[in-house]
Amino acid sequence: MSELDLYSMLDKLVIQGGNPLTGEVHISGAKNATLPLIAASILSEDGLELENVPDVMDVRTLLKAMERLGAIVDFQAETGKLLLNTSKVRPDEIPYDIVRKMRASVLLMGPLLGRFREAHVYTPGGCAIGSRPIDEHIHAFQKLGADHRIESGFAILRAPKIKGTRILFDRVTVTGTENTVMAAVLAEGETVIDHAANEPEVADLCDCLKNMGAKIDGIGTGRISIEGVPTLHRTTHKVIPDRIEAGTYMMAIAASGGNGTLTAVNPEHLRIPIEKLVEAGVTVVTGKDTISVEAPHGVHPVDVETSPYPGFPTDLQAQFMALLTQAEGVSFIKETIFENRFQHVQELNRLGARLKIDGNRVIVRGGTTLQGAEVMATDLRASASLVIAGLTASGTTTIHRIYHLDRGYHNFEAKLRSLGADISRVSD
Image 1 (cartoon, rainbow, N blue to C red):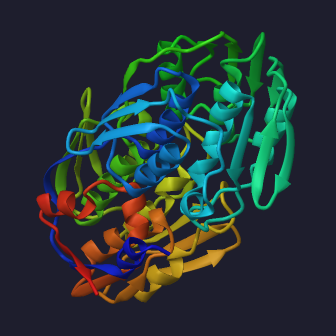
Image 2: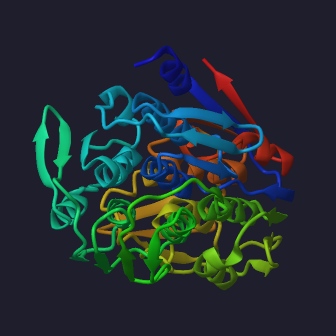
């Protein structure tokens, strides 16, 4: 573990709760869109220029991996501009110390295989929220003509050539769809992906690849067809807004009984979460690229079930649970994506919530006044739920192991302070 990692793990957030959040907050570029876009730069010898890139740890970690592959990286964090020169990239091994920190390292497989016909990538790390096997990725690569083996922890892929084929995913997989698209854009012939993920982040990747010269149809649907081309070229692409960050702030404002506006956001990407907030009694007004949220009189209980896009995102389940602790009555939250994504329940109960796990759902008995306490963050989105709970609790809430937050939220404390939150980062 590096010295920087150790200091990050020791950081904690201290929150004095009870302040309604008010004002405006600017939404950053989407982390989950940026990561596959960085990987996609490998597909062009000319590289790629990205705008609206969030300065979060997952992005920094993947950029380290890109540098180990030979890329020249120029990340201007203050402006969100990222310049990637990939002319000297080679399919080298990436040290485990880099890839263990994030699951997105798996996204390097597709573009490396597509451009070089080989890839050496460690099986991925990231949050411990449940089983996220890469068998669907490997199956797709094999259908495209690659051989696969595991050696010393590496997934090693080699293919004499990549040929288009039909791929049917057994289950919806976002990174599997992205990896397959990136492997197929330089293949010979046509590739058709059925049961493809249609998340906005997948569509954003496909839009960028088309601007680089790829031929892709069916973007934003469950069936994507790709006609392989010989080469791709450099382009400039602006990353879409982060819908999970936006949803987190919406729920934080509502839970605090506040009144705030999100800017630089795409409301269409949050249609179902917005509907659930309205069902809970929250006033939500959308503009072209703004969302205003007001909940001065509390919220009502509602039931939620996570599902692939356009359903309710699993990445907002924990935050919505924190909000529902403030609802008068009983709510039910059902998790259908990951089997171990209720680690935040115990910590929320330490703050006085009344939550009970029942199989793959949680029974939320709301209407209790949360009390500040010491809690432990367990993963990225669970960390955000504890922040929301702490903002509503009376007294002082201290959240340990907040390095999870740094993986996916840009300037989280500063943005919350701009809305009136009493929150600070403390290093032990």
